[in-house]
Image (cartoon, rainbow, N blue to C red; front, side, top):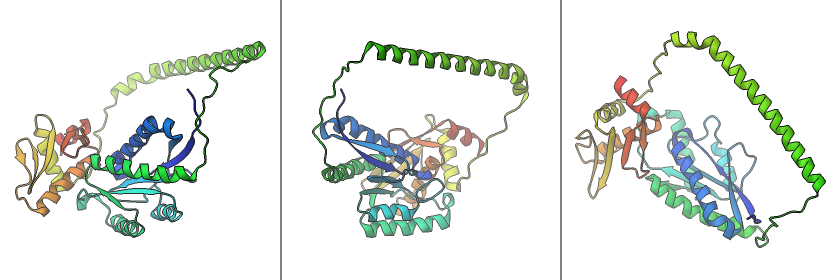
Length: 302
């Protein structure tokens, strides 16, 4: 059943080192629409940073801002200065010095300080915490933005619309023409593919695929990766207990001294492997991480 609703555009930024968090933010938006859009008469429309404007801006950051194909720090602050909601979240996960650009990280530090000064700074320590905080801030922002919009009560749209027989015939004629064109195009494409395969399949079989380039990793990340590669389930588990933290894989606890520096060191190694696309937080709880296929491959080669 159709209904009328106001649309609020939500620009979701996607820094290269926080891609997973960006996906989580979009998931929350879609879930909000499923749960609240019909009742509230508001639909949240995710848009990219190439959009000219938006009603709400949302992003999660770790070590960088304003890279290639990303919105600059100035543009983000400009949006906040306009009075529109800017829901910005900053990861408190430790950073390994070998996996960031020093100049870019320094600029990111200035951006964080500006966000704190503007009152648009929120921190998070895990995916679950990000989900919870983002949903809370999102509901506040929607409430504020929705109050500024005037809209009518959602009303039913007629499910049946009477059309004449002549119009029906014309619609059928148009559909039949489009179907014929599509079938002809698909056949031509398929024929072309068959010819291409017949001509080159023998040559392709003779070519040996070169080894994929190995990612640049810090010594700590390499040490941890090798050990995870030996684990029966290719898993590393981080547990935070009262007064202590453990990071275990293959029967080895990497936190040999329960001091802040030691904990930060190995948490940074986990984050680095995750950032490089080798390790995945399967349960999104910041505790259980599993090597993916690329991680297993690299673990055998480093």
